[in-house]
Amino acid sequence: MRRLIHWMLPAMLLLWAAQAQAVLEVTVTEGVTGAIPVAVAPFTYEGEGELDEDISQIVAANLARSGLFNVEQDDLPAAPSGPADFLAEPWADTGVEYLVVGNQRRDGDDVLVEFHVFDVLSEERLGGWRIPVPGDMLRRGAHRISDIIYEQITGDPGAFSARIAFVSVERNGEERRFALEVADSDGANPRTLFRSAKPIMSPDWSPDGRELVYVSFENRRSEVYRQNVETGSRERVASFTGINSAPAWSPDGRHLALSLSRDGAPNIYLMELETGEMRQMTQTSSIETEPVWSPDGETLYFTSDRAGAPQIYALPREGGSPRRLTFESGYAAAATVSPDGRYLVYVHGGDGGFQLARLDLNDRRVTRLTEGRDAESPSFAPNGSMIIYAMTDGGRGVLGSVSQDGQVHQRLAAREGEVREPAWSPLN
Amino acid sequence: MSTIFRWFFVAMVIGALSACATPTRDAEDAEREAERAAAEQAERERAEAEAREAEARALGRDRQFDADALDDPDSPLAERLVYFEFDRDEVQSQYMDMLEAHAAYLSQNSGARLRLEGHTDERGTREYNLGLGERRAQSVRRILTLNGASDDQIEVISYGEEMPVAFEQNEEAWAKNRRVELVYESRR
Image 1: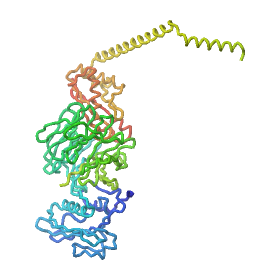
Image 2: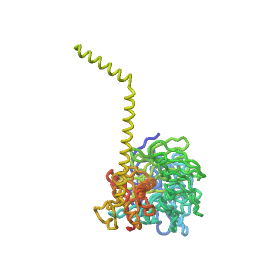
Image 3: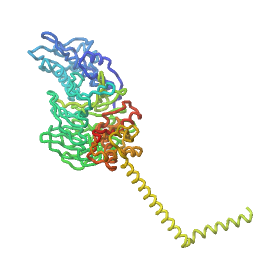
Image 4: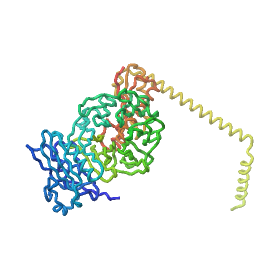
């Protein structure tokens, strides 16, 4: 196993300062030893005026943020923009293993972006792409290009074009303001979907990435709402007596799993969205909550304290008796499932506070992923590479991110106020 | 050792042996009698305790509360907070008198409506804490209804850890946040 090292990226802060819109500032706090050295040459541009966004800079920032790469963007020995400019000669001595070059030109309302990835050591071109990007969607285009480059070099799909939903909190004396926000994976392009003077919690994405479902206390009690991310249109879906909480959208998009206490104690229910038809999945007097779906929609994982303390259980979607999965600690809750269905990452608690742990559903091995004292609300990235979660830093709510193997750690903090309850969107 | 002492010692041993080896019928009867007396005494004490409790409860119900009593800072009704231990939902005995007063008030003012708002500290997951806050409010509700309040006068709400009153991260703050608040929505 490779040893973890601590390294900060002061350069990251400079990059971020240039992005005025970012609501979250991302820093890599712990990366891998032997991060892959990559150079991203600035993409040239032919056309009228200047582009609103610097695509190559966004790509470089994305790759650096993953913690897997050591990214060079300045002080390059040459300024190539296409395959004809690629000469192994000036690159071989730089220690750079991969080189990304590109050019951009105006094509009507679009910007045509052409880019190539070279393996410097073998002097091979790994691939070249020409992508038309709408002129008003350059950031989104840059994230997609980042996904392609990431996959070309690592063999795994990228998740830079996914978005993050989260709850922000601003405190002004006794008064607090809550907001449900959606931002790009790098914290840029923040948009507020819903504001309230009362708490908001537990956002979850629809599988098509168009809607969010979440809990709002705007009517002084917990209720579940769904809201379209693009249009903002909003609808209340659960407002029964008692607790209405922990919504989880089924992979087929047709059901919500919920925790409701309308018949006594909180139990797991399925709601068919089209008909509103309800089905009770657990019948206990204990606390049954935090349902999540396996990617194939066949299994529900949830938290229950039926054995005295919260533990994670698995229940077939068709019903039956739940099977306990966690035995490692006195507190196991809030599971998130990896996109391949192999791992559960959850909040693991004991005398030392709350950390994230990863359970391998194949061999039942448990690995601790974080070291702090108050991790909560983990959410898997749609490519399975990392898990975003909430924690506190000096009493302030910030987000953390850890790679699936526990090696790369990032911190995402708001410039002002607090952030919590993160949820990765699906990839689409 | 002097001769007298030795004799005395032997006599003592013999006496003890004979007492153990041949218990008399009288001794057995006496033992049974003592047991019976003890049982009767315990039964009497239990009955007396129950009577005292019933009397206290009756006294509580007889305590007359009008709506103004809710504003009287010296009334037990002025107490509107029940605190809990970490991850527990049992109501501690020091809150019984206050809760019995609220139950009496509710039973005497049938139009009164009470919201029980359950809260937890920040430790543990938000969703689990929502359940725990509800359990705490339900514990308080049970005591109120057992003491004369009617079910439809009481609404139970849980805020989990979402509405803390103390924002520090230490035991003192956490203890303040683990609470059920009694909120009168309607007074009579």
